[in-house]
Figure 1 (tube, helix red, strand yellow):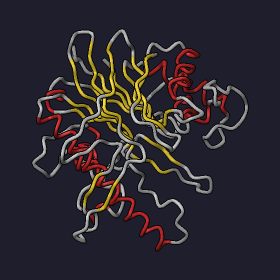
Figure 2 (cartoon, helix red, strand yellow; figure 1 turned 30 degrees about the vertical axis):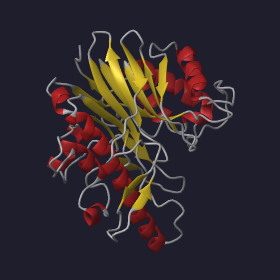
Figure 3 (cartoon, helix red, strand yellow; figure 1 turned 135 degrees about the horizontal axis):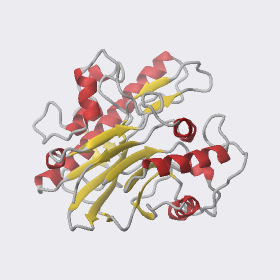
Length: 333
């Protein structure tokens, strides 16, 4: 089966309050891209990827006036997608939800939140000493991870956690000093979220469960200068690197660590409105637990700049989002 994670930049901006697609020449949430062009591009990408399970990062908003499920139903119907069943967990107030599309003929997904003494529910708060001052800080997820149990038609089961960790970017900083302070503060919070998530993963592994953790982690080994200040990136914490935790595996992490000074794979390509150069970043991952790693899965980043693709698909990937889908093909039957 094929499992995918895909951050669709401002997916919410393509729908009205009734959940209907706004297929017109108005501007989308993407810079210099119309809603019509982004919608058409997404249809091309979803059909090309053809996954059985797709985690949507930045899924349409769910609030008192909007419904994630209604909007995604409209999207699936528009493009006749076979992944027309939808699961979501805790809604948030960022207009960027976590939701999963899946093919109901292949599997069934249920929201399966869990908690333990050391790792509370993701829609609550986590207490940890972030700055080593002997006082506990309270950390929350602005986008609580989506915990699911996946049951296959064959009877096999595994646990899957969809993630959108806090960005480290110093949004709103007015000068370099503020940018540094904000970056360090944001990294502390992101590392706390990673520790919270890793404890939840470890609890499941200790119970003998197979686990997949996927999504936009807004981090990667060696991605910024503040990583050395804290010793490890969020990715390394979740992977269990340098600890006694059972390791979680994504080959792209290993590729970056081994080839520190070479060309790295990347899953996102950003450009600010006033910045002439693009920033390439590896921040989207699919981690698997040891038993699943032994099944010989194949990972792929659908990067139109690094992979030979049909011109129509390459352009669709560029138009659809500033992130590219990441897929895992694995035999779980």
